[in-house]
Length: 267
Image (cartoon, rainbow, N blue to C red; front, side, top):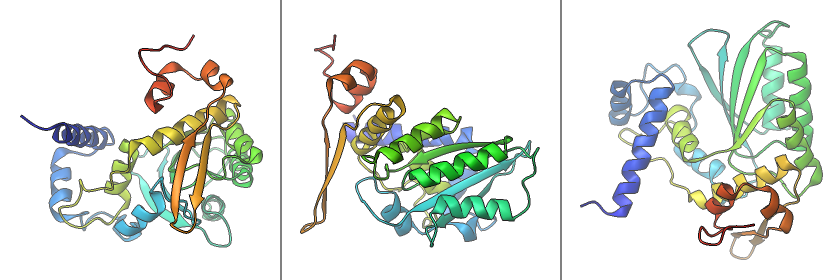
């Protein structure tokens, strides 16, 4: 009989398998990638980041100052996906992406494309404004954003910026286990035989950020607090919900974060 840990590992592996197949990959290609690493025929290979970069940028417990963006673009009805990555320069990664995409001259008034971002930090309020302005000028573009962490989420301007993005039609979500698995296989130059060895970050941190994002979208005050002990470089997360949080946040979300016990339903 397998141990609970074995069962969980099989469940995660199965979930990743389903995710890859739903994105248009076959079981045979997964086997080949697992044994040999990313295929040499993969045209995105030279644009992949190294495993250590993915681990340090996207660890939800690390409050790293630099930001990293992994992105994919699908043009119109084409089945091909363009993937690449970017990091902060003198501008934030979001602004760099928008300026690069605009300067390439591929976007016209009637151009249709879908863009997916995997960001190590959520957009600040200035980047949120720039994104909304870009989308208003290109109505055929849709954007989905997954974030590993929330950038300075106590700042009311950043909170309002994210809320405005969602209101304008942008999908914003916190990265879950599925997204980490997907990014590892499609954006990371993982070693041969290491396709399934993406970093297993504790889901608890993801749930905390997801709860706080939910509060932002609902216009609720912050409930997630983050503190650092600089002498040991330790990061501490704590949830401090108020009455309004319990009143407005769906019970299943509170249950997932441990704020509500199944045997003591909130009235």
